[in-house]
Length: 149
Image 1: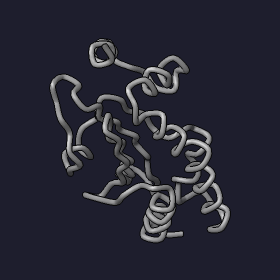
Image 2 (image 1 turned 30 degrees about the vertical axis):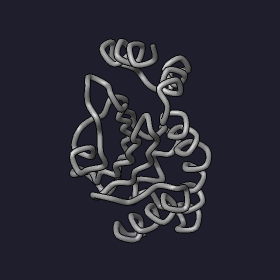
Image 3 (image 1 turned 30 degrees about the horizontal axis):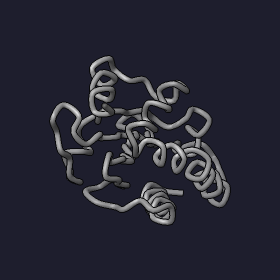
């Protein structure tokens, strides 16, 4: 599978899972948060990294709108793909195209969708932090507490 085929496949699966493509990323929104999937091509090899970024509305007084800027920044909450899925993003790893597709679909159903659904609320983000699925910087944790009161 080449780079173009991989990105098309990723986009199809993202769309099937209710993500909207815009500005080179994939977005899912709620009234409280915007979740962004940012697929970044490495400059060091033929692999990608998937960055999850969540922007919390009202955090530090900010109101976010879906934009290219959200792809460039780290977000209020961020993390990378789970380590057990790194090989699906490495196009030098010899994986049959159908197997890569199945593993990518599994990543969405088993991790991305549940993670982003939880990350689309302030309470969900707190839960993710308690489960150590994300690390909250002290200032972000403080802001979440302020916004929840």
